Length: 337
Image (cartoon, rainbow, N blue to C red; front, side, top):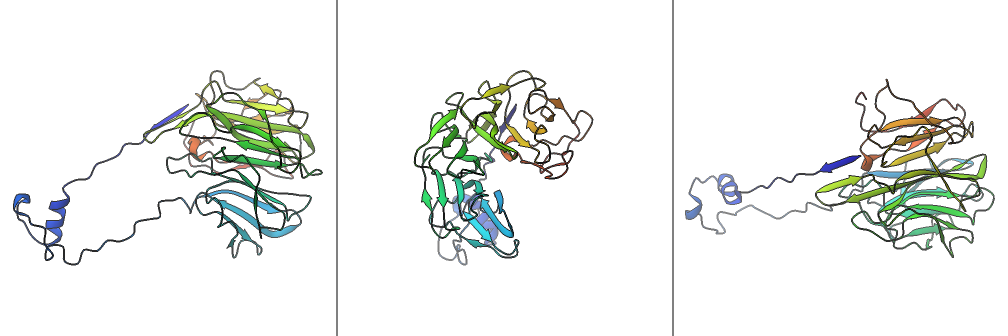
């Protein structure tokens, strides 16, 4: 588990700094505030203090290779129709912190957006639920889960686009809220929570078997962010599998680390449905692989560079669509394990 403390340095002696800037060496007691001393000093903007430059999620449009949807940590949703050469904002009237984007493979004009990023820095933004467009981003409707605060992932049934599952991380600075895995079967009009552990744990990842949409994998994450510290991991965390579209779930454990777990990322290979990858935060955080659809797991990086990172910058896993032995993962930590 990870626990990070963020120290804060205090900077004083403002009057002395101003005296030096003004070219004076008078003692502070003799210093007088007047228009001559502060000549030339002007207030300037130091904001905004949001993470608009951090990219939280990206998705493409099936059959339209040049269309890209991008969600940012503090700058809303952006759409490119020329392969990323130019982008335009399409979500400025709504929440600016974005956690997940998913385009329907049945109809590329149907796009779901989960607000509130889950890369849980102390500068993380807050969302206000999930949104849907049916006209390619010209208009948006909020579809509920307003108290989820952060959405980690969205999956859409390929043949029944009104069936959508949402991984809601929930509040970071306190308990409660809407957290866990939620499912709608009527396009977002109603929701049911189908996976949950406790009021301090939310869903960190969710994926669907590309060859069988009834098979789903999800991770729950016990986490608490405070201004001065960050606690990741606990009994509420775990990796789960559903074989009936999310109605029931089985907790996976064979070959996984003992003891409490932290954040978990999971992905299924499109080239071989039985091949599943996971990055698991634990006492020995590592990259794991299963060749029997999650029933048994093997740690893969005992002698390789550590592919994991800090859990609030936990990069996603992207399997190669044609080669089941190739997988991509971004990250910030390349130290030797």
